[in-house]
Length: 74
Image (cartoon, rainbow, N blue to C red):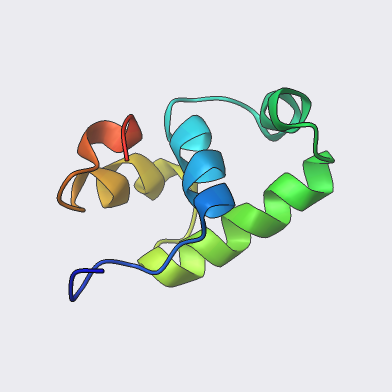
C-alpha cells in the first residue's frame, strides 16, 4: 500500500464508492445485503479514516486518492 493512502477495507471502499455516487444507506444496504445500520457504521469508519465529516465531503476525499477518481474505481 502506498504511503498516505487510507487503509480502508474492501467493504469500506465499496460502501464509500456507492455513497459518493449518491446512493442512500438503504439502497447500499439492499445492494450489498447488509442492514442500513451496518452501512452507516462502515461510513462512520470511512469518515474517520479519510478525515471528513460526512457524505458531502466524501466524493472529493475519494477523488483526492490516486487511482480512485471520483470514487468510481479502485
